[in-house]
Image (cartoon, rainbow, N blue to C red; front, side, top):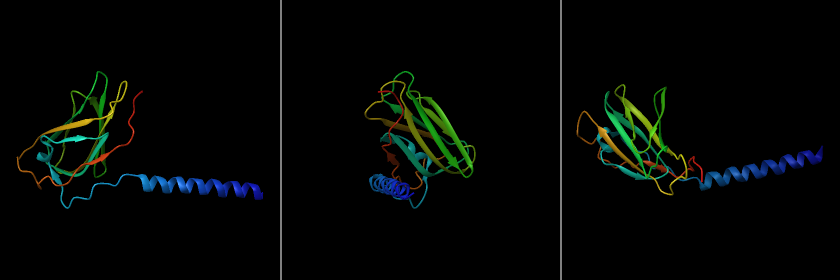
Length: 157
């Protein structure tokens, strides 16, 4: 019985250290924005990262954001995940063509884009954004930065 307790103690210690190391090594999130970014923030936005996540996007009903990933080859996918309140969305499209999110209601949205390679995953990805907005005013000025996460993506090497 005593040997079993020792094994559990050692196992618990190892798992605790692994958890602590993961917390220390995890990348810091972008500082929270004091106000939401608006639709026009995305016009011409380019982000080089494996994954892009932007929270508190203030969109009016009918406004849309399109994202493309490059370099992309035949079969590569761009994946959109998002939420607003209790509603969630998951969608995918051809990475070179891009994926468009259109707001169903005027609300604040949390959106993320990731990449799934059909073959070998590129070592560097650039997400390019455009938007169709009901106004051309950037609200507020584009000071909040997207959270760029370097989590490993799917794909074969």
